[in-house]
Length: 385
Image (cartoon, rainbow, N blue to C red; front, side, top):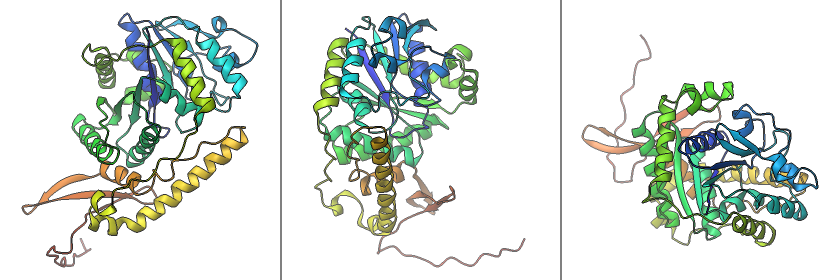
């Protein structure tokens, strides 16, 4: 039986593909038979990070042309690869007949120990179905509030579809492990409170200049700089996946692709319903009042993004999935806002500082107070030196 792990994210630019490539590489170094399937698209794909220029890609399996034996790249850094295209939309936009040919071909993959699927970011039906069909999902986020917000929206959509598999989180590009753990803890609390679901931490991966250098060199970080901090962190991710107490049972490769085809061709993805809990029970009233106008602005922005995504999907001939507009309302805002906060103490009083992003990219720190707080007017400060 094969463990099929889908690595996904709520937004692009979080380092998801780098995690997928290096994690697959490390598993292969530990005598695991590994296939890396690149289901994404764009210039920064798995083949590019491995220095490959494949003649055929996953998209070629949708036509009556090259077979799996010609598309599959064998023994690249110890693992096999089904490459995605840098100039094609990957698995997005495929017709039903193309999906049937693709899943039939991929069902013939060898009985690997692991198949690691690197998806594109987003909620298109073809991509979301990969997560829903998997027994294991790795959600990659960064400490940035926008990453946390979009990851929460994706989680809520999976929750609405009653996904029952194993979801674990990787917090990437953390400045320190302590800061990364704090970001994860706040995100975990929001998910547990609103969705009633626990999402364990798979691990933290530190910000590392050598990762960027490895991407530029088109070489896995663990091959180029195996002793770098980020490489050690990714080794720790492999440790967690291989830990006997936390390992997830494998599945049939053919069965996985049958489930995927059924999901992508027959299932209707309804937008998640808003929480039925009164707003007064979900968030502090004072905080809600002070952030209400900001929440409305975020809702409008999310709705516009969803509209643009629908237009893009129509342009490539796909029925757009209903965007999780309800999921990205106040709950999504709180998820992102909480992830970027920190607790401070001043003159014996403890309170929380939040960061609000401005249009020019700068952050403004702010704190909230209740009606009963004893507020004092600050003394004027001289601007003269």
